[in-house]
Image 1 (tube, rainbow, N blue to C red):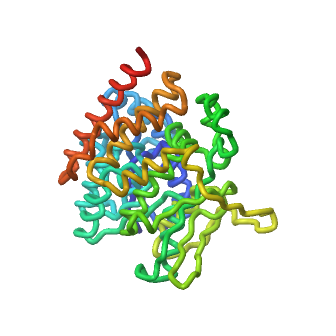
Image 2 (image 1 turned 30 degrees about the horizontal axis):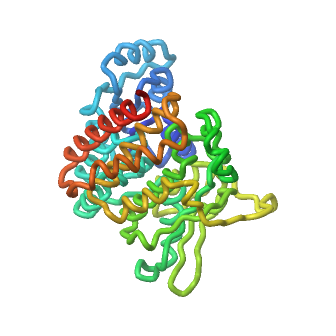
Amino acid sequence: MKGLSILGSTGSIGRNCLRVIEDFNRDFRIVGLAAGKNISLLAEQIQRFKPAIVSLSNPSCVEALQLQLQQLPVKFQPKIVVGGEGLIEVATHPESNLVVSAIVGVTGLLPTFEAIQSGKSIALANKEIMVVAGELVTEAARMKGVEILPVDSEHNAIHQCLRSGKKEEVRRVILTASGGPFLKFSATRMRTVTPKMALQHPTWTMGNRITIDSATLMNKGFEILEAKWLFDLPVDKICVVIHPQSTVHSMVEFVDGSVIAQLGITDMRHPIQYALTYPNREMTCQKNLDFGKIQKLEFMEPDLRKFPCLDLAYSAARQLGAHPCTLNAADEVAVDAFLKGKIPFLMIPRIVKKMMVFSNGQSKFSRVQEILEYDGMIRKETQRLIKKDYLS
């Protein structure tokens, strides 16, 4: 039986992960859960899966969780830990074999890195970790002999496609993007975009930041960096195509001209199941793709003039150093400002570009703590830039 710790158990990926585990109850044991402030849902998860240890983001939530647990029909009391140290304790628990890293943002970096250092395999659903610390994380995984299994549908698809050939036979990998809600918008109409409009993703249900990043195509830019480190590929072998139907999750083209594609419905339980049960393939309890309902599959080149964030990400992936960390931190602050109505939609890439010029790349990082300190500095400088140039 495989012991599992889930970082971000009450988020979308965490909830779907637990739904998959319910289908394979005989194969997995939940060792640890880490959550934010959704106490009622976490209490339900504790009652259902009985983890040995639970982490909360804030000490003030501990008493509330204990009260919730006392009111549940089945009394069960796990060890409760808090904050960053608590996350690390869950991630490195000796009974856990696999850690699902699903906490959004750089908060998940240190516990995931420590899990790798403890010899845990990682089911990675946090793309920011690879964006800001891909080199350090993949090197640590190589040294410890552990696997990083991608949960993102696109990288999960590439992982599957790469089983069809050798690395030296790969001509390129092709990341597919839905194009978001503004694929057919004119440049003039893009000026009218509101947060409500940008949060209406055409095919996936996701958190606010990733939904906005999908609307700007920054999310696909992050995936370029993620693919570079996950699959040890040069940037010039990673390309993006717009595929509005989101049926083909990604493709790999080999040197003989063959293209292997992974297709499936838009349900995150499929890539989660693949990551949890790898290297085996198990019978799924989810819906299968109905080819009778597929009317067309469209593919087109992204318009970099309309979606400059993609070009910024390519630039960061080629220059490396601190550029990817700057890209991520500045984007997160700019997206937050847009969602709060402080800046217009089209200002997001302009702010990110200004911050990349401001940071000037810096030298590469040698420790996780250096990345976290630099990330904090860029966030503060981005907030200062927004206040100075756009809120004055």
